[in-house]
Structure formats: C-alpha cells, structure tokens
Image 1 (cartoon, helix red, strand yellow):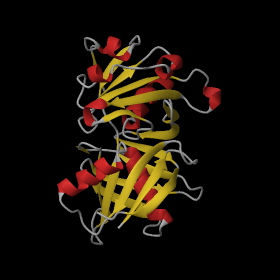
Image 2 (cartoon, rainbow, N blue to C red):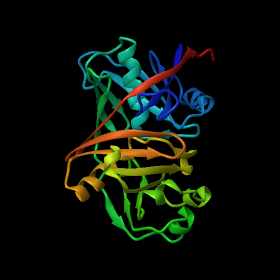
Image 3 (cartoon, rainbow, N blue to C red):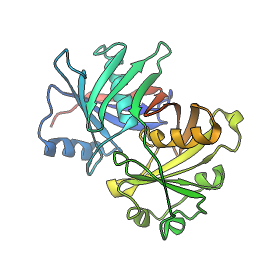
Length: 269
C-alpha cells in the first residue's frame, strides 16, 4: 500500500500545505483510518478508493485530521487529484464523492488543477466576546460560515495584522466548530495576490493550517463582493505559504492551484 506526502497550493517542495494521500481498494474500518491520520500527523490525510463506472463519481474520498474526520478539505483533495493524474490513475476531470457532496478536479496542461466546490454562504454576526483578545488584533467584521466549514471568518484591518498574529489557541478553540479564518486585503496587489488569510483550527487538532482550500469557499464570496470581481488570488499562511486562485460561480467556487509530491513510500501497518 503506497502513501504519499504532497505539498498542495504550491509549485515548489516544502511550501504550501502538506497532505497525506492513501489510495485504497475500499475503506477499512474508521479506527484504522484515524490511526493512519494520527501517524501521518498532518492537518489532513486523504483516503480514496475507486467507485464502479457509470455513477455520479469516480472515487470515494474522505479526509481525517490527526484527531477527527472533516466534512470538507481543499488541499488534500488537490493532493489526491495530483496523485491520480501523476500516477496515471486518472486523466482530465476526476469526480469525488465526499461528505460535502460531489466534487470535481480538472487538470490543465500547465500542471495546475481546478477544483469545483460548494460556495460557503456567509452570515454577518456580532463579534464574539473575547475574540479580539484571543487573536491579539482589532476586529473589523465577523461572518459565520456554512456547516461544512464551521469557521468564523474574521476581517482584520490590514495585511500586517494578519501576518503578525500569534493567537491564544486554547481560547480560539471555543469560538466555533472548527476554527477562525483571519483575513485582510492585500497591502500591495502588485505582488500577485488580492487578499491574505491565516487559518487556525485548534478545535480539530490543527493549530494553524498553512493553505486551506475549504476556507477559500468562504473567502471567495467575501472578497469578490468587495472587489466586484469573480476571479481573485489569495495568499495564505504564516511560516509556510501558498496561493489559491478563486473563481466565484454562484453556489459553486472554483479553486485552482498546483501540487508537488515530496515523499512516497510503503504503508506497512
């Protein structure tokens, strides 16, 4: 059984967001999946197996953090699609059946992959008590996201406020189901991105996720409304960073990025 570590939303090794990818013939018991995800100890490990031809999806896909299963994960989906295409298991568009519905990933000639995800609806909410203190930053506005994500999207005053965050993770873990997306407009759009973000998910065992595809299903409608454009580019991360190109199409959001396999080996257990 092969296991791969893939850096997603980057075209260079040791940047972007690493994900484990395990291709199976069928899903074994949940306990085994969780043990493997804990052993890999990345923000998510993706497990996938092929489905019978002729259905609405080609592969079944699940994502697990070191401590729990999640409903939606962008970077591990990108990593899985990358593995399928680079190993010859798939060409063109791959359809995945996941807990959040049917997702697709389409490879382009330049090596990039575009994923089709559900757009996260946003609901303005009052700033929760203690949120600004937990983040250590002034809060401009707060939005709740859809259940599949379960985050608070928090707008901060500027890019430097996002970059300098050193939050109280224990306090953040009580603020939402999954975590907090902190975001601000880019200081200089000439650098190739329109907005910045960082994502903290201590409630599901992830202190900071370097580049979060699922978060961009909320960031895309938020910033597209501000900029008046459907196509944007976001830069996410602290110590590790990566780029996500977003295209808003109503109830669906397209997420585009690259990926690089950095480790491949045998899973013996």
